[in-house]
View 1 (cartoon, helix red, strand yellow):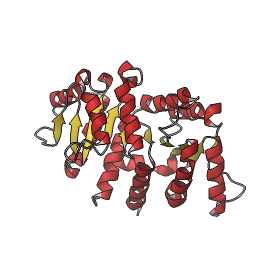
View 2: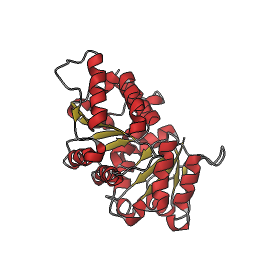
View 3: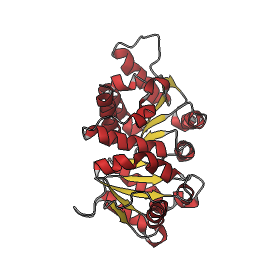
View 4: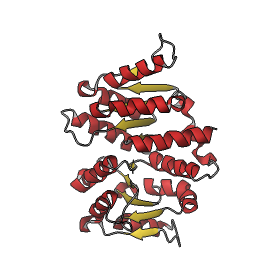
Length: 288
């Protein structure tokens, strides 16, 4: 498994930074899985300075960002042949760092979404991804990830752009039992209505909403859910984006993404149906 790796300066500038909080708990899992990490220059150098992944042959250095390192990750997410194709990317984002909205940063996420590969932008999502892959590899559950899987005390946001609403409904139908474990589910307007109708058709009490509905995306629903994320009242977001359509409420969508990366240790975000299905399958296996 080949994964691109980058982190904005805030997230690797000292030993307490987000990159190292992630590696401190996830390095054993990365070694177990034999993950090949393809790290942009400063991120790679910082890992070495802090002594993580010492002697690990799976850590590879790419050029500095200013020399095209992040651009190369974008191309390899798309695919540059059997020896230069990434299976996803971890990019720990500082939402106030101007480089987080450079074209190559935006393109990295977009190409991950288009190709159904994980785009991982928070510490919590990176921890969660390692545990998902461990479970799929047949390894025993890591007790250190139990907090991520304590769904009964968490709120899950389910959001889908218009063209992705059928995919969201299909996902919720197939993985209904996993999603029903969450203490609360929230959604934007139309998606929420359709999810409630699905739940009622499956026997959920007809006088009880399965999801709490907020405004539609264009009317501010993304901003409402972002507020819950910032307050620690929404711990996981599954957001099926349509990367091919420009949207008038793009700023609201970016606001939700910014909220998630602001609380990087608390919020998990999944942005593609294939990735969400892999997570849900692992969650069911782990519980079983």
